Image (cartoon, rainbow, N blue to C red; front, side, top):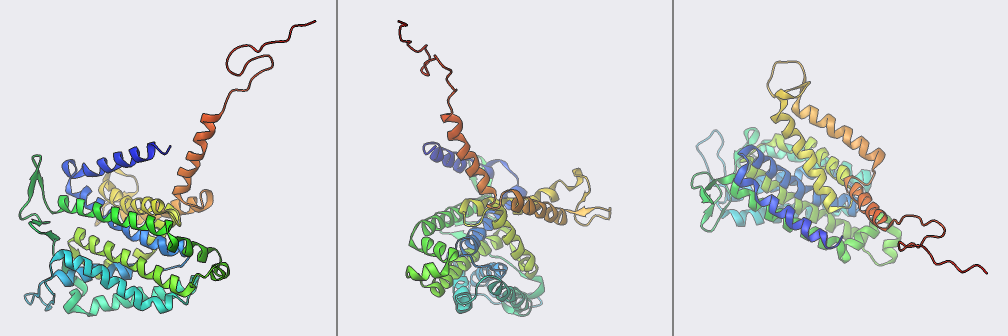
Length: 378
């Protein structure tokens, strides 16, 4: 089993490197949405699954990351109806600064997150979503108001992630989405490895002890308020990275993207995938993100589902997707409370039993394969 795992990871990595050579822009953009969701879900799972803290304000921190990158990397623009400001920083610097800015926003909220627990923290973070919507709609020089603003493309030294100067790799033109695909893969790997190392280290064990019993954790010397605040800050930084990547994939940010529905989607992701599991958070994020895109793509071929803007009677792709993963959420809670990751663990546990099972030996038969030696009768 241990030998197969590195091979499976290597095979999955190779498969993820192939899509830009073969698939069209729609699927590349869908994959980038899923990557951003994976990063944000991992961060929320560190807070909710490991630390046991409920947060309904994850969409607010995604908005901080998305608009933070757009404002930091954007140029001042006075040509439109609103005069937009920007710092014109290099995109990599703006991306890192957006993550730091989101972490600072989480740290400002940490005195509250360190003292509140459960439903009370959920209600407090819920206020962040409404506060964020108000700021996004009224801070027009930074956000562009209701119509939003365009996102500057990512650019590295000697490489610009746009369609103006596409690269050619093995005869395939690589535009902005193709190049951004590999940038997103690097971010997912970094987020995954950082979360796994955090969970395996002392901070992860302290957060787990704090989730199981605050009294027992305090006896062992775990500072409850400080650890909760740290978990909230780290989760916010994950959301900031996801928001910046989401902005690059959308190529335009508008306030409607970062409402309460987005926060609820992330809660569904970690519950469906499995609380406390990095792989489970990734699986739930891919499921919840890709399902609406699939229904929207094939709405004309599916029964009872109508394309967006259609006058026919039926269910829209977005609504149908919410019904489906809502039903999946109910089934998961009923039959696999630990999420999709528990199904994999069950299969792994069954394999050794099947391998180790030996046929029952009847009397007078050698279990090696031959007949047993019988003592000579007197």
